[in-house]
Amino acid sequence: MSTTVDLLDVTRAHLTAFELPQLYSVNVVTAVGGPTVTAQLAAHHSPEIDISLLAWADTLTDVTAEAWRVPSGDSIHLSVIGRLPGDVTIRVYGGLPFTPHGIGADLAPDASTTVPLVVLRHLGTPGEVTL
Image 1: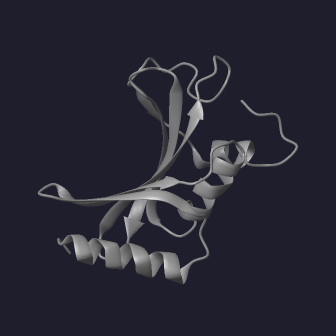
Image 2: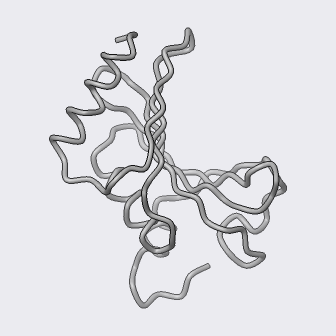
């Protein structure tokens, strides 16, 4: 699976097969290191981003989650990374403003860390105190 059309077809089929949150953008890369798809959520706030990422995580295989502080330092991207059918890697992410007490508060600009899915579940649970 290496053409742009193939990657878009796999992504479209996945979106058709599952009721997933709305996306803002999709970026497809057909590089030598393996085909990848990056999708930005249309959600802009926690817990909506957390819930959306968990919905995606439930439909992917080999799932991990991460927080990345952008190089300018003013926001954090929360992502789930997993596999679509055909061994296509997909990263789905949403951006949040950086806060000194929020998730990724300990990250330097342009640094990332793995985030346990249980943390996203906690952040996405209404009525829970957010980190």
